[in-house]
Image (cartoon, rainbow, N blue to C red; front, side, top):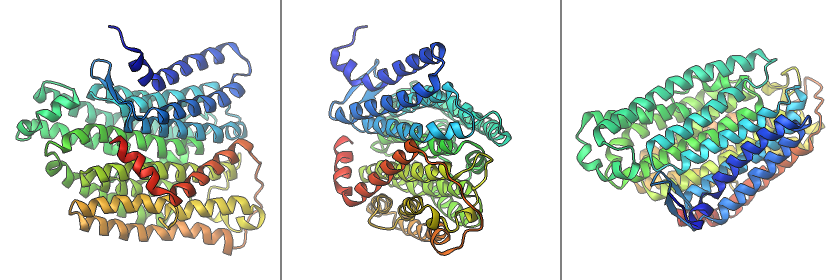
Length: 475
């Protein structure tokens, strides 16, 4: 079968990432300096693909025999995955040297995981979602344990693998039931048959199993049990990738599969499920995060509560909700990458300086890092005029528009609770005396990633409407 030049151009971002993986493998095989080359090569690759994706959002098409979509919000997700990968690679260049874990395959696995994410976002078929999910997940399992000298990293990789495989079983079984009743795995065909199939208990069971499987991937309560241990044990830069791009990819898969169903009346069935796990995730994550002393575990429970906020947008079952989710995913990715980036810089080779108490008096010796972390905490807490505030605002407004006012009110209450553990870090940095002598090694690439993250958070906070208009134009 022959494809037109337009289809080739529309599919170019994914082709470039796949070609980059093959070229990276060749560099790893042939060059003794492959680690130094692959770090900056990955940064350039992700940046170029991200720019191409953004520049081509207006050209929408269905390709590969109706198996994948391009353009529109798909390309927005492409850009988000690639820019996230770029920032993670910038943070990783010096971080890996610190732990003497500079392996060329690290960057190849990051590239492969991003390719899997792109497949999930582009999917028009359930099997394409599954293919992208496995490509991303297998890369994640290895990346979690990439530092082979750390027992915590190996333990977190094993936990992630076992629980991830368990979650995948739900997804596969759900797809099997959906196919058995709908006689197709095409998302559009399933959507067109939804009204007739909605009375079939096996079909509804398949939909719920599919959602339960992805509830593991987005770290929603009660499917969150892997998150704290994995985030704490994995390298900090990889924890940043898990909590941002990995979560975004899972939400992208839910959006591409549910968005088509909402127009067929599926919201009456799906909204109650999403609303319940949203409430549980928000309050469980916010309350448990208060008692954490390790900053990576605190961020892990923060990730659970943020999954709850994002689920409010999906439960709204309207275009405004989807736009709000994409906006907040963008803001949250920047906020979490910046936060984990600072953690990775402050973290010592012996896995020390990871307790919240270690940040006491940080403003005295490292005022720039303290200022950047404070801005990130303010944004995560949802304080205006930062991007985190507007992300939550758009999601809560979409819920009110869908007559889910109570859900929006509960979201606001949970957000108020979360202010405590975010601002506690700011108080420690500026109003507490240091108990240890922090010695931080400067990182040019790491600081570049931090400045880019914080700058974009401020820009999105000052001009939220412009970015939201771009999102709405692609839906």
